[in-house]
Image (cartoon, rainbow, N blue to C red; front, side, top):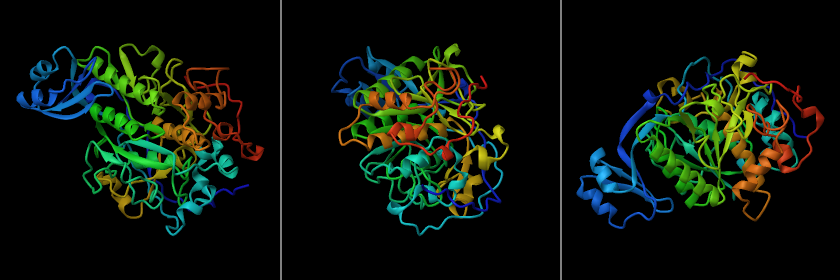
Amino acid sequence: MRKMGMPVALAELLLITAAPALGEVGDWRPTEQHVILFQGAIPGDLAQSVSASGGELVRQHPEVGVAITDGLTDESAAAVAGNARVARDVSVRAVPDLDQMAWSIETLPDAGATPLAHDPASAVLFAAQWNMRIIEADAAWDAGFEGTPEVNVAIIDSGIDPFHFDLAGLVDPLASIAFVPSLTGPPAWVDDNFHGTHVAGIVATNGIGTSGVAPHTTLVAIKACDALGDCPVAAIISGILYATSIGVDVINLSLGTAFPKNAPGGATLLAAFNKAVNHANRHGVLVVSGAGNDTADLQHNGNAVVTPCESGAGICVSATGPDDLLASYSNYGTSAIDVAAPGGDLIDTGDPVTAMVLAPCTTRSALPPLAGCAGNLMYLFVEGTSQAAPHVSGAAALLAAQSSRPRSAAHLKSALQRSADDLGEAGRDPAYGAGRLNVCHLVGCQAASANLPPERSVSRHRH
């Protein structure tokens, strides 16, 4: 049996609270770009038409009939689009803010560990990773399920830090790309916020300071959000389609916003988003997204559609705390939630070490409060559905690694739901969907009873 990481002096910790509510119309900032959604083929002369109207054709995705232009007025964009649907792109605060800073981590792991010969459960800070134990990831590692570099998980987010020693060698530099360039690169896709690196470290790490669910999985950074966490919707859509085109196995979207159905252009952007997610699904790519942190019942959410949670055929993840209850901030709803996973909840214990999710911080953050990450502050405690989603992405990567034949996205989604621990109401319920993720059950291993978290028979939730 693998041992837990040795206790480490965590006299000082960095605390980041859950994301602010997402989806207020005021959170949207119109960009200079437009998204055109064609019902059929994209016209061959579209670039010339856009140029003649004073703009530029930035990208086109003929597989779903989406084109993205820059520099057009709303009127000229509509004229160029003709009978096609068109909407001005918006940049949304789809990644959480730094709400509250507390302490920094004082003790750092040994950076000299060898990446591919590690014991995930011997990471120096593993004692603080309650989240990995509650989903029995350590039992899966103990049974030999640690993933493979042949499986790729795309992180569409604020980028990834390939210089952090827990992520060094895990990020594919040739496949990674920036649709929103970093302020602190090169590379252009390096994380200048914090969010993408933290999310990536939940999927996979070198097991030096912390361990990810699928340690040997290859990560692909797709930077679609800027240093402040603002993400143009067109960049996210392009990121999904790009990841699908290069043949990744899983796409992680720890971001989101609520689209008012009657917002100008909202229906067109939603339709383009749906087409992108469904295109990925048809090509065998599982799209995993967080449910959002608004404490909203998505079953009865009025005029709002939370995307990507409610977009297309992906899998939407709610967040739980260390007590296995639905996190106090997590969205919920029977029609939306497929599975639950640990996202942390500070109100459970009042102690970030035992209640929040620990993962790496980027050394290239442009945020002044995170300047320490460039020096001795290398890991963050964070909570949110953003942290829940990558647990599921990592688990899907472990399952995909078991077969030399690609598994369909529908198969991965079904297996994740079937193997989940059925908490809350019997069967599918608004808080947990099919249940809380169990990695050991998913890959077919047996967990020792000593590793099982308490109160496995929890039958209540907060909402």
